[in-house]
Length: 596
Ligand code: FEO
Ligand code: CA
Ligand code: CA
Ligand code: CA
Image (cartoon, rainbow, N blue to C red; front, side):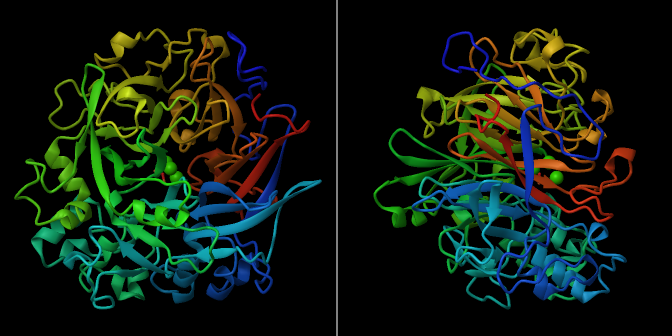
C-alpha cells in the first residue's frame, strides 16, 4: 500500500490467525529462512554442533543459546551486514540430558559460554541471507569475557572485589535481554535478570548490602543454575560485591572484534530490558530503558555532551557523563523525568555519592517517587515522528500495596493480565525534555470481549477484560494480543510488537507467541493485525528491519520451553527432538516492503 496517500492503510499483508502449531507462520506471500541456530559455528575452526557431546570449548566458538535482541549494522562498502544477537539465558533442561546443576562443572561452563552475545557477518545471496563463517568481524562474548566498568560508579568501593581490587574490570555479562544501537554505530546490550545468578543473599553479612540485594531479588539461597558451586564470585557470602557488577548496560563496538566491552554505569543498575537511543534537539543523546519487574520503573538518561556525527570516537565517552532520570506519570496525562542526582533534595544525605545512587538505582528511584509500572519491557522512540512507545508486559499483582484504587491512570487495569502500551510525547518533541505528555495506546486482550473503552475511562481504573486499540473501533478486523515485549518500527513508522508469554494467557485462548503490526498514525491508527506465529513454547524477539524495510530479522527464543501446556512442546526448527533457539530472516516473495 502507499503509506503516504492520505487515508490509505500503511499495512497491506493478510493477517494470520492465532495458532498453536509448532511451526513459524507468516502471511501469504512471505518466506522465512533460519539464518543461525544455537550451536552453529562462527569460525573456521569451530566444530559443528553435536547436541550429545557439547563442550565448553565448542560452545565458545558457536552461536549461543536463547537469542533475544537482534540488531544489524552496515558493513562499509555493502551489501553485507553485521548481525548482533544477545544470548539471554540458558535452560539446562533444554540443553542437556541429564541436566546436573551444581554437580556437572562442564555443563556450568557450557552454560556460561552460551550466554552473552554474538557478532556475525551476514551476506545477501540468491537464496537469502547467509552467515559468513570465519569473517574477521565474527565474535563471541560470554559470561567470562573481560569487560571495563566506566562512568560515575567505576572504581566505587561497592564494585571492588578480591579479584578486582580496583573495581574497574569484570568478567562477563549475563541475562542480556534486549538492547539498542547508538548513533555512532555501537551495540548496547542490557543485563536483565542478573539476580538469579548470585546465591545465598539471605546470609549476606552486611545488613545494608542484604537490603539492596533483596530489593533486586538476588537469590536468597542457591541460584537456579548453581554456578556458585564452581565459582566463588557467584556466592554472595564469598564475594559480597560481585552482584553489584551486574545489571548494567554494556556497550560493544561490533566493528572491532578486539574492543573490550564496557559497562556504562551512568545508565543505572537495574533489570534493564532494553536501551534505545534518540537525539535531543541540541544533539545530546537520550537513552530510554525499562526495568522489567512488577511495580518497577521507566528511565531516561540524557548525556551532558552532544553527539558529533563527524567524530565517531568521541561517541564512546558520551554515555559516561549525563543525567539519569526516572519517570513519574501523573493521572492527568502529564509526566516528568525526575533526576537521580546527588544534588536532588530527595536523595541528598541518603546516598554517599553519585556512584552509590547508580549502583542502588532502584532505591534512589523509590526515594524520588517514581511511578510503579506493570513490568516495563521495551521503550523505544519512533524514528518517524519521535513519539516514544513503551510496553508494560503484564502485572498479576495489582492492586498495588497502598494503592486504594488498585491501579493508576498509567497502569489502569486492576489485574493487568494481558499488558498494555503507553505512548509518550516529550515536551516540544525534544528527547532532552524533562516533561512529557502520555496516553494509553493499547490495552491488550481480546477486542471481541470489550472494545468499548473510552480514553477518559482509562484514567478511572479498568477491569481485566477491557481493551483499547488507540481508538480503532472495528473489532472484526483486529487481532488478539497479550504480553507485549519487544517492539520495533518499520521505515514508515508502523509499530511492530512481539509477545512473550501468550501461551499462558487463557483470556485470549493461550495461542503461541506472535508478532503483530499496527499503524501509529492516520485513520488506521490502532488497527493491529497479527503477522507471525511462533513455534510452540517460543517467544519472538528482535525484531529488526533492514534500512530498506525488505528483510525482517526475528529471534525465536526458547522453543519448547515449559512443557506445562500442550502447545509448548517443540521440535523447531529441524524437526528433531531437541529444539534450538534461532534467528530467522523474513522476506516477501516478490522482494517488496515487509508489511507494505
Ligand atoms: Fe528478558 Fe524483560 O524480558
Ligand atoms: Ca523481553
Ligand atoms: Ca522471555
Ligand atoms: Ca518478557
